[in-house]
Length: 143
Image 1: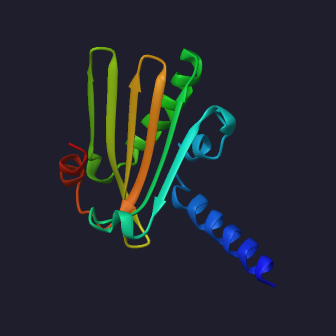
Image 2: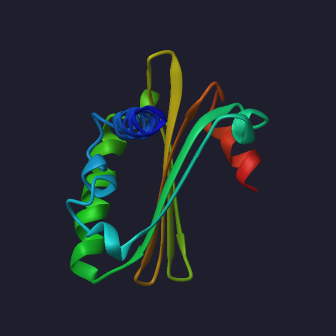
């Protein structure tokens, strides 16, 4: 009986976290449709550890791939930039690095953020959601 509960809880957790970035173009990357999951390092954090940052969910992917795959991911990020809330996105480039931070339209009462960082052939893609109010506040937390 306990085993059933554990399996059910694991399934429920996976379903909730998979839904988090649904509706975004970059969801294809998070689902492993662009880069195989075994070629990515994934981190998921949920709950109390994030509450002091006014976030409730954090999911990141890190991977090193070919220039062609990087361009595919970048096109998806650019597509999500177009739907950013109030055109609230920022891009910084220099010294072989590109960083993009996007505030997406709220969903289910939560503010959503997407960050893309590329250095040479390594990419980090981060999705966050919570009560954090703005991209400027997110930048303060990250710096």
